[in-house]
Length: 475
Image (cartoon, rainbow, N blue to C red; front, side):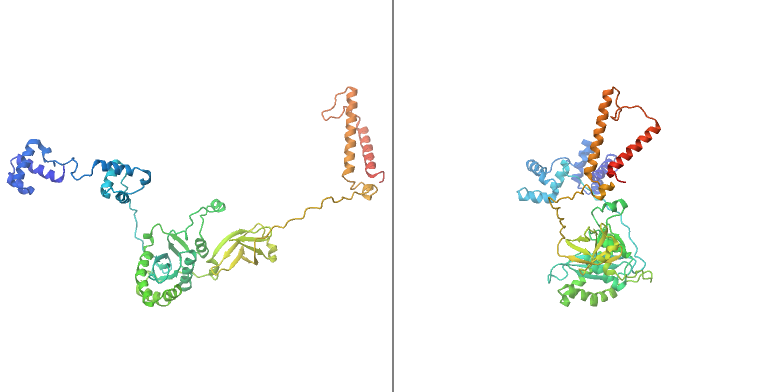
């Protein structure tokens, strides 16, 4: 029963107990006397069920025809409409001449189980207090907006906001790229030095989505982007926000600049990036920071010094292997290393190819800059000449000194010695078979074991005979 029906039940029970009269009951329920008499009669006849509305559970008189509902639900079951929501599906049905309100379609889909209610759970967020010192943390973000009101093409404003003081640094760029992040960070560093940490979003500029190399995976290191590598070398911590609300200070600052800076550029008549960046540094940002800056909780400046090689750190670095011809390939360009680095033994070693923002290229090995020259094209491998065919090989004569001394007698001589040994063993084997004695496992004929003295004498004689044959009888 509904709340209204429960109220009528309590009043009707009071009338039945003679605690109330029908006139008093009509005043309590806000009904007329004739209406309260009908309610009382249904209550007496049917009891509690007589107070329930008679249309409950019955179809509405304005409902859609059953044939239309079946046709619409049949279209919704098709595969091409499987991921359509009620609003979009209602628009497509209207194009086919089927007028159905999106709320009616949503109820139909829920009733048939084709759609389920998905409740979005809100993630708990906690208010974060400002950092106490100027330079302890700076938020960085790119704001895409029609900054010049169609006076030029689209561009992006790279905005940096100090978390403790609201101090703003900004610079216009064509697109939100690593180069744009380098430029705005360099401007902040030249003006205030480098911050301790940067709070950024999870854009591909700041976070690498792919897998690292095998060496990085084995070492347990996560892959880094060029911006992440530069911040690691500078000692600037890189904090990745999990939501836009996490770095809400720079997000709100983007909205303020989209309101005030657009109007300031319009009044100044600026329509190019160079003039806009000059206007930001000289006029707009100084006045803007004086108006909106807040005092930090601590007077300490937490910025860190800027290294001398800031231009070299804010660059693009790639590891390449030195080839056997002392060349390095990177980005379709080939570099020939100088001969003066021969003592470093750079072949098959990795060097860093560093590309600066002004286009200059540096080759670095263990912190040492190498000398090189660019090659106009890829070096071609040197083809070795094949040996000349039919070249006669000089054979030493029989009376050559080396032959007489037994040195360098040549392959032909040793082949002859080998053939004589094989013939001797074959003759001995044949003689053993004729004598009836079994041959040894090695294939040599069996013979009686001579005495040690006789064996030694025979060995010496054989050795002397072989030496005389080898040297031709000369000692």
